[in-house]
Image (tube, rainbow, N blue to C red; front, top):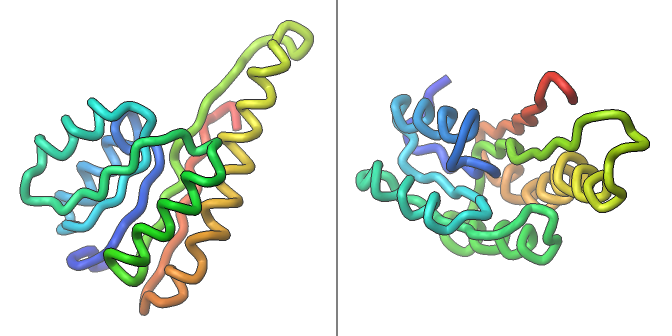
Length: 143
């Protein structure tokens, strides 16, 4: 697959697997990368590491529905379409179910399921505008 000229959106792209994916995409020729991450300093650092890349830095929590809508709108305004959506952000609250805090369970479903479905929903029109679109949903072994 040729990645030159592709517009990519990735959640959780500043650390761990997400950052490795961003690095690989750049190595393969991607120069337009929208990254959703909670930590503004990590977003800034990523952009500084790759000055040749056109980063759209979107600071926010994927559990925030309005932020997801705004991210899709920003991509539409700036790029007009999206070629690759990578739903990578995730959180885990592990252990016996009765020991996990209610808020942690709620947050886990909001980030790992609801955000994936909603962001995909908001990006479908952008992906349909692409000649060659892909959606990648990343899960951990616990998923």
